[in-house]
Length: 338
Image 1 (tube, one colour):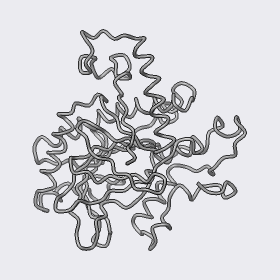
Image 2: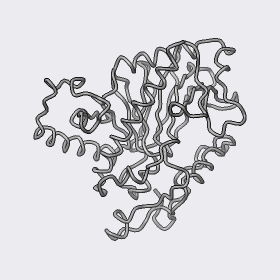
Image 3: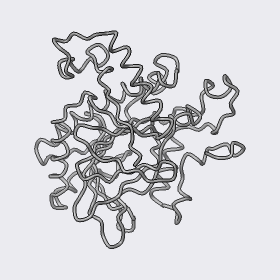
Image 4: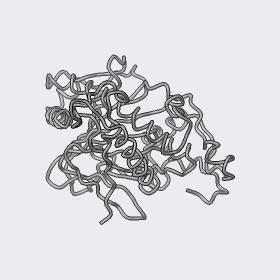
């Protein structure tokens, strides 16, 4: 069976490069780090991530700096919340004046995907509608959001190096981060009408982190075969989104993936989406086109236009899955498709 690569991120988790964390949290002795060993290990990590992004668009990370205890408790708190009666959960429904998807919601009855979800933005966002129960849930959500946000900066910088872009290119390109959001998801058990938790799709953002409970269900399409990604304690799944695929002119791929609902039980997960500011222009970079004599595989577009079209597609889904709006809409037809 094909196995999605797992990458040990600890060579990049140091006090200088990840200032909100401490070296003692990652097994270093008295804070002393062998810089030569780290340099060698960083190259190994970058090689592994580059290979995974080229071949799968998915990889898993361990020793990423987020405490396993926090990950586990956040899953348990989410499970408690979603098992509350409907009248408690709807206290977190956002009002009609909120311009962004926030708070509690669930898929409409006619949708083949059966899940409920709670979305939040960074702490202090006026769009947030945070739960009051269980009492620890609100603080846990804000805590893990901040940690995922830090991790997104780090992984984005690693991808920047993997693509051999100028230093801090992606950091400066993606310099407005108020559209990042975290989703806690609750999938209902498989039923007589199907087992789709989330239909096959690609993520339209920059990079996504997924935390699964011990039930599993996440699958990625690789060479025409659906590959399951078994959950493992303390492990996060990472996938690059459409923005990276377009910027790299298909050097790195935004993989098709889905969630299959389990039999006889529910499933909990978290997904953190590192997004792009809506006014950013997205097109293949010259480093992957004109500078190496390769034609661009995509037409350029404003990110907000892409997001709007994807949202409308979800509100009014096409009858056929293959007709859904996705990044192929911007593919240059003379390239033979993507």
